[in-house]
Image (cartoon, rainbow, N blue to C red; front, side, top):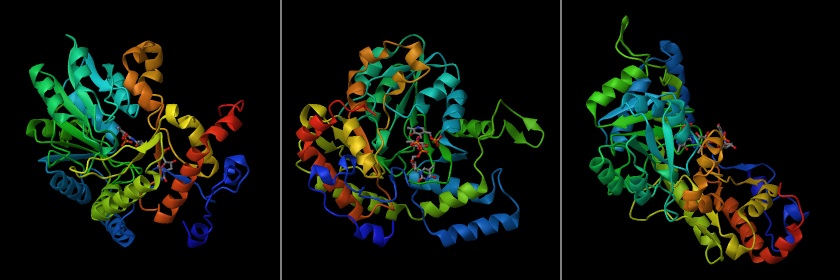
Length: 412
Ligand code: T4K
């Protein structure tokens, strides 16, 4: 975002100023949710040159090994196995643990959390969330356990940890595997401990849009040495040596350039957190006092990566739907996202397989209709956030009139 563009932001106070109603879009270039955070480019270049000089591009090279060491250290866990992405990592973990039959999973998450189960022939049993935290509701987990249940797959959504204590109790009591999809939660804590060593095993994502990216990438982290050995084999076709295959496997390896990117970005995590935190606080202050819109707060007593700015639009108070607010923001080139709409249970193949699933997922339904995530990260400056908050305030303050103008317009 260049200074010229920044200096153009003018205060929008009237409906006619809004781009949707004929005004000039606030931003010339689209503002995306999920622009990558990038650390020291010179350091990354040096690493890439070194990789090319060494002619060792993948298959447990030195950068992957160092990345695994550093992630294990950062997350306070014994073993880290780097992978090509979190999706494959989850599949490997689920297979390695022998999960089968039914596994309980929240309906409000990226669809891949359900897909990895379905892909392996396991039934994802959709559980509701706690609307206050957006994470799986342990009370309902208990009720969904059947004789076919083999595990719980919790998701630390937005980097907000699940109720790990309650889920661990249930898993112990009912002899279930407990796996955490921690794709969004590197750098976050629970009970003073870093996410990474809870449950039987946890999985991180280092996709471009994540708090820490390795271009594409993921990691399996665990304190279970036997499981670590097994997943290390499984992510390398099951090879234990050149000619020795010990188990079924796949290609889940991380490459050296991804590890170089991951290492470089890991050196800047403190900066990433402070930028995200500053942005979050500014959004919070900028939107304070508006009736019907609120940011999902992060718990101050916990460390967090603040990678997601999650706005909730309560239609009953704003008189505007989340989707109407989104359309107005999009016209300004603010590409807010309605993650994870409409919930896993309402997309294929689950919508067809479980047409009545929504009946026991009231909180998921409600939250999925409210959430709008806003742009943050390195490229989002305080001036950009001021401009975004100004637009949201203008929209909400003129909601009644805007609602009338939108009446009769097609929904998309
Ligand atoms: N579990 C959970 C709970 C997850 O959220 C995810 C992934 C996974 C598991 C699986 O992790 P991986 O297998 O991917 O490691 C994005 C990411 O693609 C996805 O990784 C992530 N969750 C999810 C929350 O966000 P989309 O559909 O929003 O991706 P996309 O391509 O639309 O990217 C969003 C925006 O980011 C773009 O509009 C522009 C910007 N962008 C994106 C890329 C790739 C950039 O500016 N630069 C880029 O390089 O899912």
